[in-house]
Structure formats: C-alpha cells, structure tokens
Amino acid sequence: MNILIAPDSFKGSLSANQFIDILRNRFIELGENHNITSSPLADGGEGSLEVISKNSGFEKKITTVKNPFFKEIEACYLYDKENSTAYIEMAKASGLILIDKPDVMNAGSIGTGLLIKHALMQGAKKIVLFVGGSATNDAAMGIAVALGIKFMDNKGKELKPVSKELIHVINIDNSSSLLKKHPTQILIAADVNNPFYGKNGAAYVYAPQKGATPENVVFLDKGLQNMADIFKKNFNIDVQKINGSGAAGGIAGGMIAMFGAKLVSGADLIFELNNIEKKIKQVDLVITGEGKIDNQTLNNKLIFKLSQLVANHNKTVWAVCGYYDGDSKLRKLLGIEKIFSLAKSKSEINQAIKNAENKLSEIVEDISKELKK
Image 1 (cartoon, helix red, strand yellow):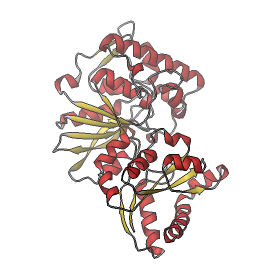
Image 2 (cartoon, one colour):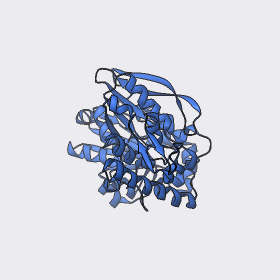
Image 3 (cartoon, one colour):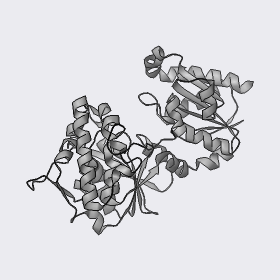
Image 4 (cartoon, one colour):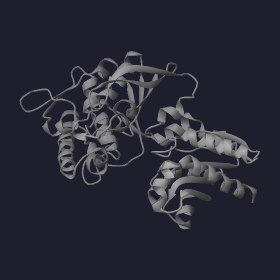
C-alpha cells in the first residue's frame, strides 16, 4: 500500500517529525512492507518553520533579537532568495516557549519586528509571518517599534511597546516606518477567526494562557478597544470588522492596520509549500495526527482541512490523536475513516502526554492490524 504520513505536532509531547519517525520505524519492525512517504504539517503556530525547512532554496538566517521581556537572544527565520521571501515564525522571537513564566502585561513583540527588519535588509519583498504561540497581547506594537513607528501617550511621551501600554496610546507616528522605504507584502498565516476585542477577542480568549488574571483580561481588552479606535483614526481601518484580527494577541489586526498585511490560512499555505495535494494523489491512504480531536476540529482546524482535501481525491484518511473527545457521528462529519487515540479516557491524558512515544508505538500495532483487514 502507498501511505502518506502527514501529522501536525502533538503539543507538549511529540513533534510532527517524531510522529513520522515512530510510525515509519514501527512499520518496519512489524514487517509491514508499505511504500511510505511523509510530510510534516503545521497550522501557522510553533513548528511551522520546521515543516517547511526541507524545501530546497530556503536559507536559514540567524540574528540577535529581543525576547518578549527584551532580553537579547538569537533567533532564526527562513529566506527564499530566489523569490525574495522571508518565512518568520513569531514563536522564535516572541513566543511563550522562550520564557519561564508568562507575564503578558509586560511582554512585547519587538523581537519579531527585529526579525522582519533583518529580512528587509536582506532584500525581502514578501514576509510570511506565522503567528501562533506568542507570549504577547500588544497588537503588533512591539513589531511596529522595531520597524520605526512610535507610540505616544497624552503627554507626548513615547511608550514602551508592551501589552499593558495599549490603553495609554493616544497617537501613532509612522513617518519613519521602514516599510515606507522598503515596500513589502506581508502575509499573516493563522487559522483563527477571533475579532480584535470583545468576549471572543484576543484578550478574553488567549491572554489567560499567557499569564493574565481576569482583571488583566478586562484591562487588556480595553487597551485593544483603544487601539482599534486609534487605528481607525490614523489609518481609516476598522480592524474589529476583520475576522481573525485578534490572532496572536491582536498582532494580525495591528499588522493589517499599520502595514497593510493580509490574513491567509496557515494550514493552506503549508499545504501549498509542501505540495501536499500532489502527495495525496499518489497514495492510497493518508495517516494524520494531532494532540486532540473534538468538535472544535470542525472549525477548519488543520486535520479537518486535510481530510477535506483527501476526500476531494477520493482517498482515505486515518487519524491518530492524543485524545479523541467525540463519537462515530463526529468522525463521519470529519471525514475520517478510523481514529486511534493514545488516551482512552480523560483521566489518561496526562499519562499519554508523558509517555507519548511508547503509546504511539503501541497504537502502530493497532494500525498494522487494521491494514491487514
């Protein structure tokens, strides 16, 4: 059988490449003689650069930037010189993964802006920004400062680009914006539909994961409302009306207003970069995977997008997940023929995360049995 293994990462346990290696090696150990190809996937969050890094012509660029708390670190991005395109992952410079303790109020995205600045100096005419996994809620204030924009309070004092200062912004000076000297297309790769502010907005939905208390959330949401007003006044753009503007702590909305960025699907972009459709056409079965599959997966999550693509070519898809919170009806709605879960109940989830490699090895035996039927 021709099999394509195309998983997302299992957050907190397995990378997409680890998943692929375990399946491939276990199939060999079990004497399965299949023609296996692989393509690690991501939806615009952490790991996005890893899954596109094998594309020929992509050069890894390393530079010194600042982490969410302004400490100097080294970070990388990928540069496609032939197409003058930089692929930048926000998590590399402004991610939760970089800090010991989340503190969204005092975190900023300046490091991501410094990566963009470095890419502009390389001659980039197009920036693709993967925004998942950020530690901030600063509406791209930090990115903008790194690119020459200033934010002032009611006394004309320049503000530090961190989330808690959004509420104090009265004026934006973009006269020295680097993007005026270096016109560049910016694409924001994300797969969320959250508005800029409000109960489903950036602060209420994502800030608690970044260390915000309930009081912080209310404060940050007011800050985002203030920024939406400032953006409307300065750039004549109502970011609240743009689906997905709340992605990554309002980074998407800020980038759209200040730099004319466009939102694109992270999953679709990675499908395209990895020629996933061509690979699907050449196989009989696609085995995918991610940490959790539930009703939320139907909201255009990566696995649902992949299963739709597989269905378009009349091929079969099976999925492996850390935990499946659903029934046969959901499985049919997702278009997945079989689902294998590392944890059999919610009480087993933590254990499955800790022992993901062993659990996955055991699951491959179940997959092997199903392949023989």
